[in-house]
Amino acid sequence: MATNRRVSRVSSLIQQEVSQMLLHDIKDDRVGAGMVSVTDVDVSGDLQHAKIYVSIYGTEEAKSETMAGLQSATGFVRRELGRRVRLRRTPEVVFIEDRGLERGARMLTLLNQLSQERRRKGLDDQFEAENE
Image (cartoon, rainbow, N blue to C red):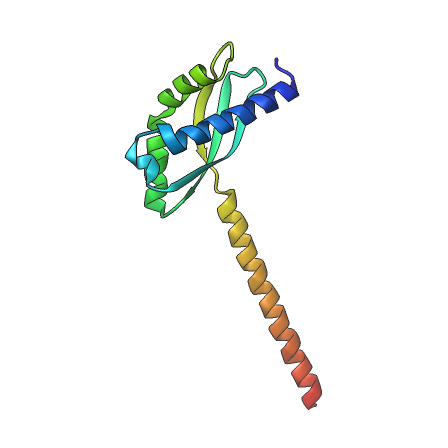
């Protein structure tokens, strides 16, 4: 088992390298269909598995197309990681779509709507109190 500090360093390094691969090295056109960014990398304690969380901006069709392109590029990504990152064994790579940004934006929209409704209700109550 690797220490927490080492796992964290390896996660950070994998995130940097995969981000560079997305920008320059992965030639699959499907990956370019949506704007992709690596939001997090979760490496197992034994450094054998890496879950790479990606955020994809675009339509649902572009998102599914991009995920299909990333799934087909897992072999290339693992091979490149083995070449770029000096580890005894290169971790198995799995891409997972991160919808956290979408949920966050949705929550902000709902909170703004609630705040506006409260302000309107407060103004309505104030208007009624003045006219009584």
